[in-house]
Length: 135
Image 1 (spheres, rainbow, N blue to C red):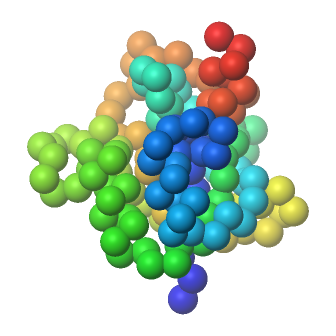
Image 2: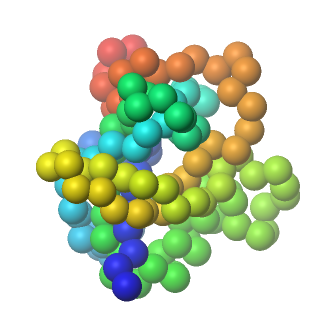
């Protein structure tokens, strides 16, 4: 069974975050992809929440995990949703349907925002890095 991870914020290639190096070393980059969700600016990072509206698309990257268990454990710590962090967690890791740019779909792990979005700015483009550059 193949395991995939969709990233849309600080873990993307051009976000220049040190945690991306973990993905670069332990995963195979598949390509650009989209997730049907709404994207919010939380702070210096975003949060995606699933949406029923097909117009709501979050831009990101899809990775194939080579050794899922240790990598996901490390990412759960990074996203502060492992058991060592107090509830409620800001994110929860869920399997979601992801669409690649070529139209293919896969089920991938996604860190979904788990708190209220009241008062948060919606990133209309669905692309955190493009929004970050525009600011």
